Image (cartoon, rainbow, N blue to C red; front, side, top):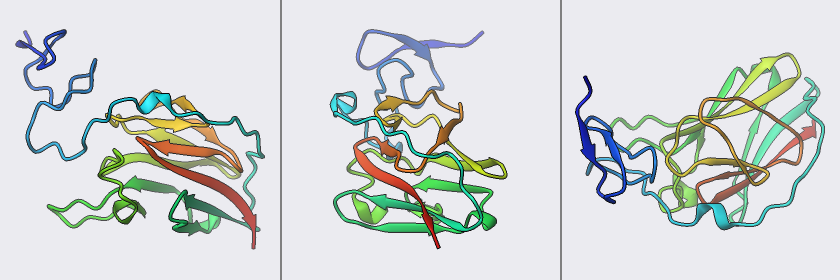
Length: 169
């Protein structure tokens, strides 16, 4: 039987070995480095409907809004792309490192989300259970459930906004 404790917010009973309250997002351990943000659901976004077909004659490009940092990938070499921040304890880097884009302050986890290529011409975004959420065109993703990623989509990790595009070489 699992031992239950009160969440620090006082509203929920949670498992004693939980690091983050699954109901309110309260961090329960001092070593949890991703800060939980208030009001991440309140930002406006615009739906976009681009192509989902990524051919070998294109590059997959991620642009961080506001600082214009660009990450570019050849789809022929893509299996999965991890998005997050550098782990200060191990030095491990994700494929898209948002540390220099104020990732920590904007609520990006170390292994926040992953983009996977499931078939020959389509990419999918998967939130990895991040406390501040991953949003695709304004809709919060359900953790560990893939959603198709299209040209011109907007991704938001916590409060950090990025745009993706499929660009001809």
